[in-house]
Length: 285
Length: 272
Image (cartoon, rainbow over all chains, first blue to last red; front, top):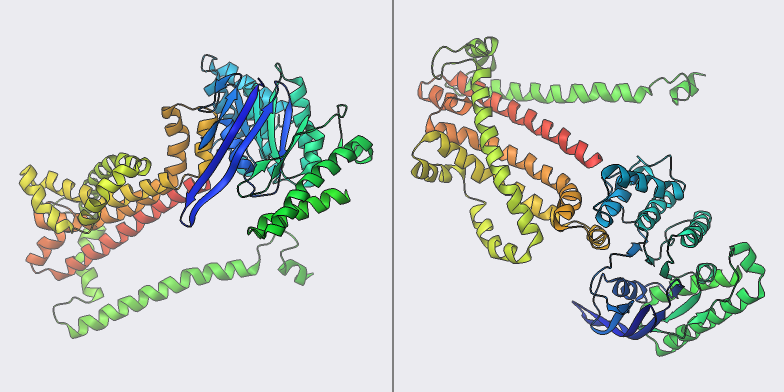
């Protein structure tokens, strides 16, 4: 049995206009220490799936187990990074991180908590901005704080919900490299599930890429193995033949599903537009 | 060169538009007050019992120029009278806030409680202080606690409603943070719910204080306690109409200052 085991998960939302089926019979397995990315278009249900796996939401049917235990709540050894940073604006960067440290290690005294929070922020290059509030930080710096907050508790599980989606390309790449470094230098193996709409980002970071086939309800395609040596960089991946294969494979799977959807004439054109733009840029890179 | 300076580019000189704006900001309100005084004067010419602005000043200046002198129970300097009223308002307002804030939090987090008490609140909210005061007198037998009761009951609604709205407006992101960090209920309340609600709470406090100040006049009139409102009613009964106008102006100015002070606190909180 895999470390993270998602089997037969379905989820619907009831809204004013009726029942919206978001996920149907989704299954997924991630081994300990692996980095898995779920790639799909915006609005395809990726976030819903991640919040179910992370324990923020409950599935209607199916089950999620981590290390053999049923997931009912967010686990103590898990950390989540959201796209919109989710920092508390009334706290400084240091206090934001310390809140996590304090909750995770209540036995640690104040000085030790602060020291740990400070060193987590130094790890992401924010040593000289620890007393600034989120409003005084750029988007990239805010996400660094959020990443520091996640790693400060020394997590065994990391859930990333489009962590770099709101950042410009250069900042995005710098943070991706930071993330790679933090994952590899962590005290214990970190098992990561990331959702993203960037194929390139998924290839850069992951061991496995799982395409999310748009619905509604969405389903998962067959996992694609990313057998590329580490460390990787975007520049290097652009010229690597293996990377090109993976990219072609992922894009083919996603566009095939997308094509089917268009033929079926389903609504949600916004999601389609977002998808094709993202994929087009990926192909031209 | 002159042109560049006008653009604010050289020497750090303030743009001339700013100075002009300040002058205009000062002149326009002065003109407004002047027009109101003129209208008052016009009315006093036609209504024989209404004292003119000048006569009002002549008859009231003793109270204004010796604001802290106590000559009798209600015959006191205007600052002393205002002080009594403010103390009473402060007590009633604090009582309203102390009761209203926790109720607001409870209603904010619990949809069941909201549905249970919302109709009741809608019915109680529009009741005039003049209606609450006799009930207070029945309940407490004395005028002072009855006045506090009326102020507290009338002024707590904005605090309750704004605190409730503030809690409901907390973005899902913050609740997610609490869940992901596995914060305890107490920590979630103190570190997330209270700071997120604070700006709304203070908007509520500001409105509540405004109402408390409105209620004080009615409360003092009906109970005859010393204060600006009591003074107003006593001078009406003594047919000294100039003092009514003095009391009215005092009430207005103090209400304005209170609102501005709360506004400053509120702005600071929103900026933080």
